[in-house]
Structure formats: structure tokens, C-alpha cells
Length: 432
Image (cartoon, rainbow, N blue to C red; front, side):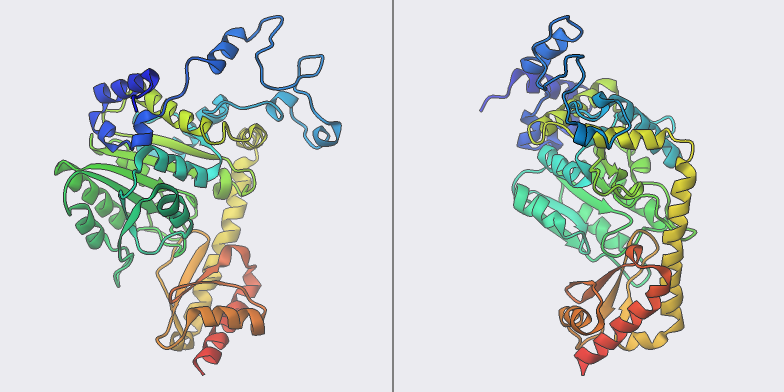
């Protein structure tokens, strides 16, 4: 099917400025655009007119969004910031604010040209929009073999892709060597998916490992592979140890090479503890990227969003923006970080104080995020342990393969020792 002229126009901009990215786009990504004509354009032209019968909402006689008092009474913000539609790109003030925050959190980005973030319905939606733009059926995604299970629904079921996995860890830490081997196998388009702090393991690379990961990607790009690197930063900022990389890999990849497109997928969900608000962002970075290129990529992303959910919640965006403008925001974030860190440290302390646990399970490397994993000993079935914990010990964990995932983020500090005792005892019960 012939491409819409508006899609062709965006593709031409991409070709003229960052030609490698045109090869990275999926068939859907190549064909998508944000409509400059039709209803949206006509509505924009009518803005401010005395009689405006273009807007697709109902209004009160004073022109404000129509609303029910039983709902409106809960919000102390202007009705226009809660009840009306937001742009498919997202609330402009929030987009600019998040871009500023990204640079603040990642000093290595200072002076580098990146796109203005586009707002998604949280990070899951951002990942699916990235799949829309870059994944065709049978494309392979290079990623660690320990990953968030929802990737299967999003990518395998949703877009017909497959996983090209490598072992996450060596005895010393992240398996950079296996990652590099995957990248250097064959040429052409490659899709990489990296999630740090990792779900389920709670691992973030060391500063040296991060440097090696970036070097491996650059090496593959210099061999003429075109590489889309999807960076799932859901748990960004929750690093608890010295020597662990505190910046997003996006900071180093955003201007690494003309053949490397870095796609940062993040959001307020975990960073700001608003899981139900569903506010996420997609941000692009590439060496040589300029305003024209980034505007084209933002337009394609907004087009995919309009074609799926129309736009993200205006109310949620407004509430999050108000937090970022609050004088107490930084101190509130620090307080919650310290609470999570204290739970992490308690897990470390408990495991160190109880070497006998090694009879039944050993902890995988962890240093950040919400989670950690233990691998049960040979002869112990992790799923049977999970069920035993439910039935006998009033305890819930997640089992996957021979691992148990433990969300210390949701366990108060004084409950961590009893939790691990229960896991130890359940393992012994199952082993018999």
C-alpha cells in the first residue's frame, strides 16, 4: 500500500538528516505520521474564534469543560487541566520539564541534542509504541535472559518478534562478553533492549560494565550495523551502592554513533511513586540528530499514540507537573529513596548473617531497584516453594524457572528477616 504523503514527508526528513534511522523503522513506523490535515488542523485553525463548534468535548456556558460536581470536587486544579483532552504529544509544559529533569539526572547529556519527550500512557505503552515504530514480525530483540515477563506479551504476541537472549550474569557481574558476541554476530538492523535496574534481578551495571556495554554497541555500529537501543528506565534513580552506574545508558548512547538510535523509555510511575497515574515518556537521541530529525520522530510517535489511545490522561499529567514545580519535591523524593535503600540494606544484612540459607538458595547479584532474586538449590522446585509459602507461611513471592523474585520494595524493614526465614523453611519442606 502506498504511503500517505505526510508519512513520506517525515521519512524524507529522516533520510536527509539521519539516514540510518530510516532502515531501523518498521513497516508500521515507516507509514505512520501525525496528521497535519483534517480534524486536528481544522480545530487548530478555529482556536480562539467566538463560535467554535470544532472541539470534540462538551462545555459549560462559560466555555470551561463540562463536568460533574461529584467528580470535580476532588480536584483543586483548573478544570481545563483535568477534564479536557491533552495533545497526543503530551502536555507541552510537562514535556519540557521532563526534558530538563532528564538532563539534571544525567549530567553527561548536557550540551547533547535529544528530542523533546513524548508522553505515553506509562512505560508499558511507551515500549509498545517503540515496537510499533521499530519492530517487524520475526525481528530479533537482543536482551538478557532475565527480563520482565510482560515483554513477551508486548513484543512476541503483539508484534511477532522473537528474543535473541544471552546469559545475564557471569560469576563477576553483567555478562558484557556474551552481549558483545550477540551484537557482533552478523550485520544489518539490530534491536537491543536493556532494562536497568533490571526487573526481576534488581541489578544495575557497574560504572566499568556500563562503559563496556557502550563500547560494544559502538563497535557493532562501526561494523555498519544499524542499532536501535531501547532503554527501559522504569526504575531509574534507585541505585544503592557506590561504583554502580547512576546515569542512564541513554546519556552515553545519545550521541555515540550515527548508526545508533537510543530510545529512552521512562516515566513517573516508579520514579515518583504514581503507579496508577500512567505517565511515561519516549525520548530519542542519535549522533547528528537535529531539530528537524527529532521533530519528525516526535511526529511519528505522536501519530502512533493518536492511532492507539489518542492521548494520555491530562489529569495525571497536570498532577505530576504540579509535583515537579513543588518546593518540597526533592526532599520528598530523597525520603522515599532512603526508605527503599534501608530495606535493600536489610536484605543484604540478613543474607550475610545467615550463611545457612545457601543450603537452599543463593542470591543473584543485586544492587538497585525494587527486586532481588534467589536461585533455589538443585533438587528444589521453585514453583512448589512458592505454593508452600502461600499455603503454610502466609507469604507471597514470584517464581520463574528456578528463581524466586522478592520485592523488598513492598516489605517493611522489620519483616525482611521473617520473610527470608519463611523462604528457607519452605525450601527445606519442599526438598524433604
